[in-house]
Length: 268
Image (tube, rainbow, N blue to C red; front, side):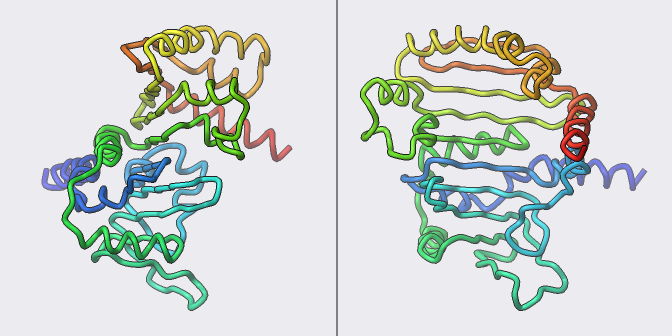
């Protein structure tokens, strides 16, 4: 009985991790940041995806982290800050391994020198959480993997929206913000919320979202995107005010099977 209760408590601690971290973490998100990503590594390690993708691959230095947040102000220039929560270094670290900057006993950051210095200063200050950081925190408390991006269509335009043709700027400016996430489990519960410039833009985008899956399947039958769309269940798309909300579910066992098949196709 004691073992069962310990397992339940461990699971609850894992699920509540984003809400329990030092609130100063969210102050590391600055006013000029445009892309924030978060992954609950504890939850991810319990998924079939972990065995397929080899777990902690991608960590910036040897060690293990319970939660990873990536913050970028300019993704095109690689201005990135990686925050590792619940970080524990590897028992043996070579002299050639990069060394993280520790903000407290279990919170580490890595990035360029200027960004790290600014983050250390933010950590030591008492300041209210910004609106952007507040939205990121809500996503972290509800989803196991999530993202928040400002002007997402502009990120793919290397010359910037100001230097683009007028018609392209209008398209880029329609979408002001996109946020989404997924909750792991037997079914991956996913959602995407897109904030547009006007309610008319949201209505048009929602209409596009309803028929786009069918169009993709018609144009590329049997392709990767089509096979992924085939797995989606309970797909809903609706416009509420200036926001388009999309949600769907993916069965983990079928998703894992598809990813293994795609990997084997690449090897062959």
